Every structure is written in C-alpha cells, then in structure tokens.
Length: 390
Image (cartoon, rainbow, N blue to C red; front, side, top):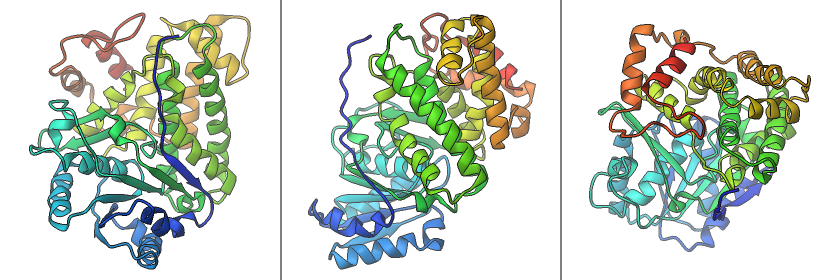
C-alpha cells in the first residue's frame, strides 16, 4: 500500500425536498451574491430552478443566473461567466446539474483568480491558487464531480478535452434528492451508471496488494451499482435504487477507492480524446465502448486481478484464474450492452481510418507512455485497444 493523504470535506445533504433548504444552507456562508449555474433548460422545465430561486429569496440571498452549459462543456461559456462574476461581484457559485455543469462551475471558481485564459489551468500551464466557494444540487448520478477534485473541460476551438485535479475543486456541499433524477432520459441514466462504474473500475485495476482496503470498498460499491442500476433501468421511480446510484456517484470519484494506490485512469484519457474528436459522444457511452476493449487487452497481462473481480463482485469462481478473468471481460461487454450502451466505435461512425488520428491526439505532447505497472500504454498498445473497440 502506497503512502497517501485524503480529505473529503464535501457535505452530503441527502433526502427528499432538501433542495428547498438551499437558501438557508448558503446563507450560513454569508455570500454577497450567488451565481446559479445550470445547463440547457431541464432545471427550468422540472421546476427546480424556480424552487431554488424561491429558497434563496426566502433566505434573502442575492443571486444572478447563467445557464447554457452543454454536455462536454466548452471553455467559451466559462470565459463569459468569469466576466459576469467579476462585474456582479459574485462570491459564491451554485451549480444545478450533473458533471458538465459542476465542472464548468469549478473552472469558473478557480479561473476568476487567474488573469489569463482559464483554459491554461485545464492545460496544466498554471496551478490554481484560490477558488470561490461552490455548492451543488445534483440532478444526475454519473460523473461524481460533486465530491471530486476533478474538473474536465473542452476547447472545441482547439479540439481538446482536458482535466485537472485540485483540492480547490471540492464543493462545499452536495444536495442529493433521488427524486430529482427521475426524469433523466433512459440513455443518460445508462451512461451515468457506466460512468459511476468506470470511476471505480479504473482505480480498482491499478496495482494493489493482496489485502487492499480500497479494493474491498470498490467491490462493495460495484456490487451495489450493478443491482441498483438494473432496478433503476426497470423502474425509473425506484427511490432507493436512484439514491444508491447518487451516493455511488459521489463516492466512486472522491478518492476513497484509490487510497494507497496510483489513481490513474487510462480509459478516461482515451475517451476524452474520443469525445473531444466528436463532442456529440456522451462520455459514459464512450467509456462503455472503450473499457471492454481495454479489459480484453489487459486481462491477458493482469489476469489475477480480473479473476479477483469475478470472485468478489460476480461470485464466479471456477478455480481457473484465466477463465475467471475472461468471465469478467465478458461481463463488462454484456452489462453495458444490456444497459443499452453502444458496443462499438462504429456506433459513433468512427472508422478504422480514424484510429491513427485518435492515437495521435492521445499522445500529443506526451513524452512517456501512459503508465501501467505491468505494461505501459504506448502508441502501439493504444492503437490495438482502439481497434478492438471497433
């Protein structure tokens, strides 16, 4: 087990109607003015925005609004928001939505204190030094950004999608009412389930000792997501299943499943290239296509860990490590397919001729292979995995 330090300070405020208390929750932080940041209208249609405004008005908290965040959020809106925040002297941000809205809010929160282009932070040209306080009302269980250090933003102008991590990105609180996720479209629900699992699986398949505390947490989280995911797909109004997915979303990406391990996420890096190449590709859907291909390649290299997944998550133990490892790979392919996720890059109209372009973008500016403790991913390995995903 590696040395580590972890802090997960985000308050989780869970339950029915908790979003109606947001005004009084924020008032405790004594803001001058709040920016309500949201997406493309679902919070308006659902009535959530009106409820939040009413709560802020009751608590006598001043606010302004800025919507328009798109999936795979673009830095252009962040730039606009920073100018608005400066003009209006905003000193607190409230994000209503999922990962895209939260990540947009995170870059606004740190970008306000940087004189240059905020995308410089995403490109790791500068380290953020300060952040506006940020709160979240979660409306989809998926990205886990509501408790994570991660912020992923695209620059469509440059064709780049990049993430950076900072403790400054941790929201102060996350309000989680499972009922707010009831109307999430079925495809987005499935993509969210995939994303939750992937945040856990990517950490799980990093190097670990025979007895690894974080692995046991990950295995329990994965079992619960598999069960709750199936129930939520069958019955979108299953409160307990939706609640389980919300909590799993938060705890899959806040660092507890990578304690003592290197928190590396190679498949996420491959997918960021994919959805930067085509912003219409939903992040979770891209992961559903790429992870089984990655698993098929690396199962041959790290079969013991894949067999452990089969034993402890799927309750499959034939006594044959290779067969049990292959059962894990088969499960990933079947489970994501049964959720209704795409199964091939061809589903995104990606052709074999475009594989070299994806590989080129993946390694652009990189001087070393993508780390793996047994076999790092170089251009040749990445090309084979992208090709397997066809």
